[in-house]
Length: 267
Image 1: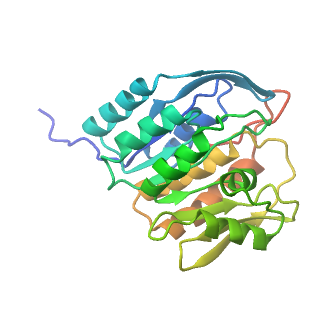
Image 2 (image 1 turned 60 degrees about the horizontal axis):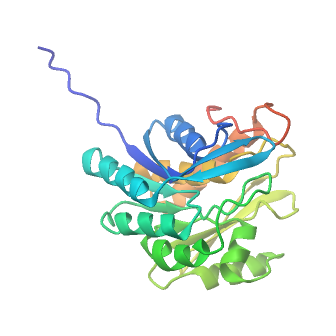
């Protein structure tokens, strides 16, 4: 009999929609986890038909099946961190919030995905309030981009001061930190603003002139979750995730006829 013990590895769970093109959603999350040497698991919330040009069909997974996927993974294997991506509907948000409320000790990254890089809507209007009321209070950090922060707050954001107002509007006292991603700004650097209720911090990287940005938001939030699963403090997890996603963008893959994917294995 061998006396070699199995390796204990860090684990992370993504709760998100699939991407038939492979550059975003669950596929991007799992590639990101693997690049960080974190064992990735998934709960599929929706099956999408998409490629680098756009999203052409969405089929929601029944909420009870989403719930069961999460329960079975967490009750058996567990997770060092969890991230959510495309949740699509209020019913799905409710199902995810209900089950995750029973696992409150696990770091949770909520990426409030509302649209794809190509501009396709990925979240029903009735789900926005469900996100704010049900899922955000459970999170460790929320990672909206500029359009998502505008939809969540009703504020128009076109300056850094506007970002700060939106972050303060999103912040729940004693609740999750806010990271508003500034990639939609036309600026020489891509700056993200972090607010935890007491402190502000900016994370910046040079802007990269490329069309290969499919799945950037998914990858960034998954990298934060991976770093949290590895036991890093939140600010350090964000800083290293920013470095990782910047590298993946700079080495983006020239695939398809639209917005190509990042190179998740660039490291």
